[in-house]
Length: 247
Image (tube, rainbow, N blue to C red; front, top):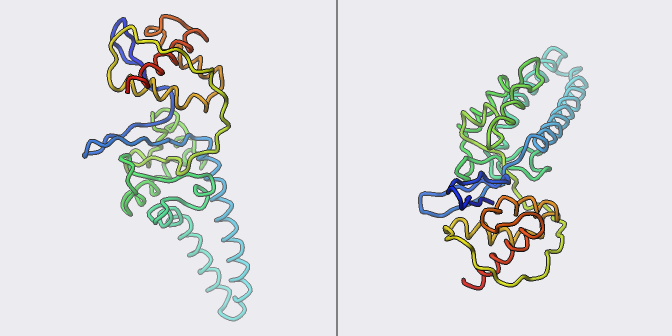
């Protein structure tokens, strides 16, 4: 949501993780960017999957090593570990679903910053830089720090490959009830098209937030409503009602 300050015309920053992308055709889409916490969980799931594959393959190869030779079996197990380390993410993220098994389990997907699927080249670049993101001492400290310092939670590999990690499906929401329909209230100042859309979006999405969150967001429009707290939220809903009736 974004509301302009009527007194000085300055624009507030967006208050959620929805990123609006305007395509060349003039169509605007919104990407719901995934934060570090859920991405860490996806990484740990992928780590468990890869470790399970390595252990199972190693035991199998050691068993058949009695036939093909233990030196050959050990070489094959090291080759498997190499492919799992370097190409596991590349193959899955450049594929149709755009996500590794861990990311799919968490409802995530890797896309271009335009919202389009990533190419094999982008998948290669973002994953070859995992070594840099994993520093120091494979703690992923650099990668985590970068995600916290960038607006779209991009690590070094994402920045260079021009990719982002987004939610691939809508989460199950526990809706809370909005206050009863308010009497229409005309805005005290002219509103841009984007401001009108933000206010209407506040009403449409209000049931997804708690009462405290709705009040917090409405307070950012206090310059428009002339009030704060629950009274300001009520007035903002009234403006949304007026805009809805108008359209």
